[in-house]
Length: 71
Length: 467
Image (tube, rainbow over the protein chains, first blue to last red):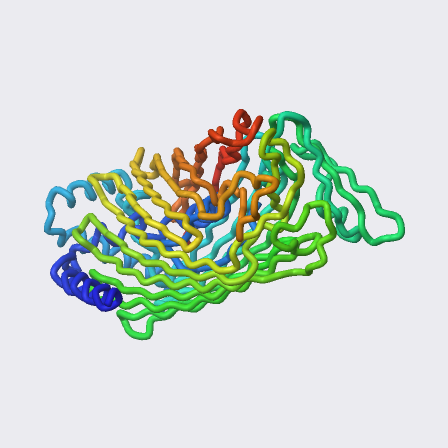
């Protein structure tokens, strides 16, 4: 039941996406490097590693692995 | 003049950015862009340059300096990361990381009103790699037991201090990835990663697919990662609640992690990109810390009578929902994110982060940031065990499984020294806060600081260049 509700919500959300956004010639700002989700490169990797090794919660942004036996 | 494909790609990207600006429906924003590029008509500003285009090759080299207060962990971590954006839209990326770790980390025991001595049985062949003669814990002494292949290792902690065990380690890590377009709107990716320390190794493979919808305003993505971890402690993996001062007879142990992320990225306006991810992962196998103990304290005085290795469940499932946003606000760019996390060990957590990237000049910026983190305790977290009481099924005193808040305050400065390059430095102050004194703790423990959260300073600096 919960899965069905989740699926219905997901499809509704996706359907709503068809009505928002920009035209192709309006992408100038969205196309900038600073607007990319992965623009921080190595700094993101450092910070993920520090928080992964010092906190109980992890994940959310990506599925990529590469953990450690952190002290 | 010969023009190679990469130069052509750069020119094409420049022309497309120019045409996009000219066609911009928002006159005010077009003025802002025009102002920003007025000082250098041949190149956009550091904050207005386009994302790397097909035909570009990126190299990001950096180093992290990490230092915890109180003589705890010090880390130096150089990284080189390369990304090759091929003309056909495929992307090859690879990174190599080296990590040097030294210092001391809490061994899990409670502080005491007098000095404490920790004695463990270690295998002689590994005795030189476990603990050095220096460290915040006061150093260790290794004594061979005649006629056996074992020795006793002892180290002490001063009265009232959090017991720390000294360590040093090196980590080598690398990853490779490849992604390609199967059609203009669909990208597949595969990758692999390896991380090896003296006493821990992890191997993982990942795969994913993303698909653009509605004139590329929407991207749906699915990523999978499978990881195998090998725990290879110097003296073997102890049984749960095994006495510290006893021989460990188990060898190595392992853990398998499966991770899936379902994501939706949406352009909401010309200035706002939003991302919503759901992440589910399961871990199965050895998940205890093989060096960490709990104090078994006297129920009346609170004095430690013995030390038992911790014991964590072998299964864990994690759920998290992440909501990230990139917002261009005039000449600045804000990054705002929230994450909710829950796992089957009973930890619930909220993370909120905000940063604002502000141009200083055409070729430089500053980016202050703030992060707040809160987690509740795992349902088996214990500061100590009480002598005479029934042992719980699981227990750990690891502060990373306890209840705490953490704040990060930091800033980054970036400057373009030459065309298509950036020199950056980011500094952060990370501080965990929690309950230091536990009301109702037995005897003297009620007046001793039981919180062992960290306070760390990190500096990350690097140089990235696009060719």
